[in-house]
Amino acid sequence: MREFELIQQFFQREQADLLLEEKAQVSVVLGIGDDCALLQVPANKQLAVSVDTLVADVHFPADAKPEDVAERALRTNLSDLAAMGAEPLWFTLALTLPKNSEYVSEEWLRSFSCGLFRTANHYEIVLVGGDTTSGPLSITIQIMGAVESHQALRRDGASIGDFVCVTNYLGDGAAALAVIQNRLVLGSEHQDYLRERFYRPTPRLLESNLLRGIASAALDISDGLVADLNHICEASDLGAVIDVENLPLSPALIAINDLQQARTWALSGGDDYELCFTVSPEKMPELAMLIAEGKIYASVVGEIIAGSGVHCELDGETFELVVQGYQHF
Image 1 (cartoon, rainbow, N blue to C red):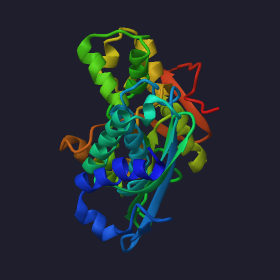
Image 2 (spheres, rainbow, N blue to C red):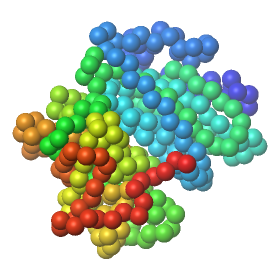
Image 3 (cartoon, rainbow, N blue to C red):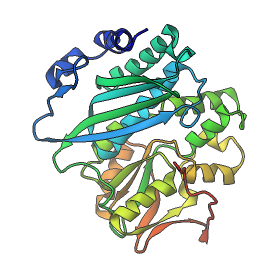
């Protein structure tokens, strides 16, 4: 199949059936099929843009189901928009596919396309362009969203005394990878839950929208809590301390019956795609109300302090980590 036939069959026609036409008509002046897309940024909003590449056997197993790979690729990118408090609008897709492989078969491409547009439809985001080429299997997605001017959640707003909070559970991403790689065996219910967390992480878009005006700084947790919180510390020129006892662990993670390992994964395992954010003492009642109303599930896990770096403590003693987080190189 030629490149343009592939694009038209799997990434242009499919979208026309699945995505919300009204949103596309309002914001997309010219979409797939020309040299550039022409996009209309909403009035009085700033454009948020991010790009990530997922490589086979680095960010996902090469033999994973194509619909799972597609959902993971788009959802992890959507998490970057959530980290900024932005509304999803558009994305582009660059696919690198090995020649003469199953990845260029109609079956693989259709399954990938279905998973991609299932997620795109759910989060109301429109595919507006991309590229295909041959080479080792990799997926690059550039994602674009909009946020009210000067309302974006950033990394550089933390202050001494702010509480460090996280959404949902931590450590599931690393535990899921151990299950997928057959390094960890649990009951089927827990294994199914962890696989779902790996391939279909939930970008915390609803939560980040509620946190605008409450959080002083925020980001998503992709490389591990310690490594990512350190980005907030560096941007804010401060330090942080994490109370290891307060880390939120899922029932599946607790089921491994190794609390030391569970806490290590929660601190440095990565691939959780939850939000880490800071909240001043004055704003904590507002966060507490959102939690009480069931609008946000979040836990206080530490505090911003003077100094630098992220320090972990358990029962008043230093909790040592061999690995601080995922390293890209």
